Every structure is written in C-alpha cells, then in structure tokens.
Amino acid sequence: MNGYVDLQDRTAIVTGASRGLGLAIAKGLMDAGCRVVCTASQKLEELNQLSSSHPDSVMAIRADVTDPDDCQRVVDLAMKRFGRLEILVNNAGRGMRTISEKFMTEPVKFWQTDINAWKRLIDTNVNGPFLMARSAVVPMIDAGWGRIINISMNYETMKRVGFSPYGPSKAALESETVIWAQDLNGTGVTVNSLLPGGATRTGMIPDAISDTIRIKLLEPEIIVPPLLYLASNVSDGVTGRRFVATLWPGTEPAGWQP
Picture 1 (tube, rainbow, N blue to C red):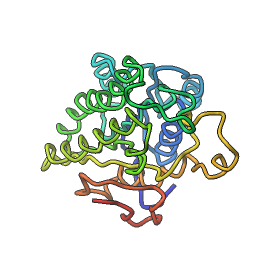
Picture 2: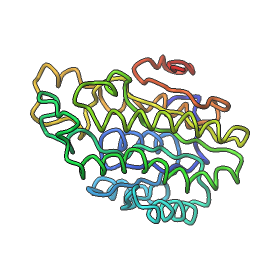
Picture 3: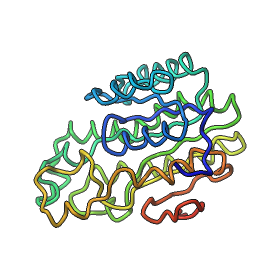
Picture 4: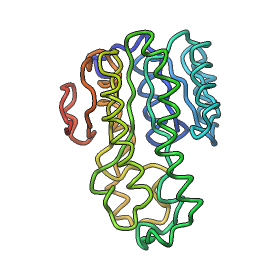
C-alpha cells in the first residue's frame, strides 16, 4: 500500500470486479482500508470468498451495469450497508473476444461484425458507466466529495484495425470523462480516466496467443498505485485527466496526459 493514501473511512463501488483489473482494483482498495462493494454479472465465486473472509469491508453483488434498476440497487445497497459512498470505479466492460476469439490475428471488418454483439458491447462499455455514475454521483454531491474513475485503454488501440466497436466504445468513455468532469466542477467530485498502458493479463486476452505476446502482458496489479492516488484526497482538484499506469512514477501525481 502507498503510504500517502488514506482510505480508511471511504466506500467504493468497483464494477466488473470478479477478475482481472477489477479484482486487482478491489483488492488494492481493500488493502488501503477502503470498504468495497464489488459487482459482476457472472463468476462471483472469488468475490463471494473475499466477502466471506472480510464481511465488515467487502460486499459482493451480482448486477448488470446496463440495467438502470441494477445500478441504482447497487448504490442503495452500498449506502444501506456502509452508510456512505465516495468512490466509483467503472471497470466493467466487454472486449473484442465478444466479437471474435481470433481478433488478434484475424481482424473483423466493421461491416462483418454481428449487430447484436456490437450493441451489447456499446451498451456495457458506454451506457454502463453512465448509468452507474448517474446513480452513484448523487450521494457524492450531497457529501461534497467523490471520485469517479473510468478504466480506459491506449489511444493506439482505439484506432487499431479490426478493433471496433471496442475502440470506439473507449473513445466515448474518454469523452464522457472530460464532459462529466466539467459538469461536476465545484462539487468536490472529480472524474478521471485510468488505463494500464498496454495489453494486460485479463479475460479479454484470448487463450490461444503466442508465447511472445504472453510474456509481454502487464499484470493487472499495475493499475493499483495510480488508482489509489486518484481515489484519495491527495488528488483533490485533479479532474478531467487521463492517467497511464505504466508511466506512473510511484508516489508522485504524474503520468497523466491532457
């Protein structure tokens, strides 16, 4: 845990927390003293174990970020259980594996993409963060302090051949980040985007990849140090910015891109 971060009295919601980046984020926040509400639409086994072993600080909820009622239910349960909510990490997302298992070697042209798969990905990656933020921001504004952290990806990947609709969905999330930060100016609630900075060992990476690619994958935990900074009061006033975990120097508030 980074020594400058104090999250002892904070409560966070982490979406898509059952594995990969989301699980690393949830554990990082918990280790920093934060109470964490972890959501996932499936595969809650490890989250349930985490909740059982830390009943005073972790709650696991099955929820779908594309469902407005589910999003409000998660916020209501967080407030009922912990009495407050200051942090939302919008991590839940669908990747290119939902379009094709061979996307890394055989790019799918946009006109070849299944229409329903396209809609599901956009609904999760663009509408999901909006719906969660729409519900979560209310108690944050009431408290005069809050953090919304949107998990994004490299600009280069947004423009990579065969990477739609995933690339466009993250470009939209970056736009949401900047606009929401301006909407919330003066409220004490900040909005920033955060990305690992490269391909990461998560469920979005196909099983059948070359060893050359596999050994270059980043570990999900790389995202934790800058996330703890953004979640803490040390980052007061830092909003509408973009942070890259591979550029994070440790305990200094750098590594961001305008």
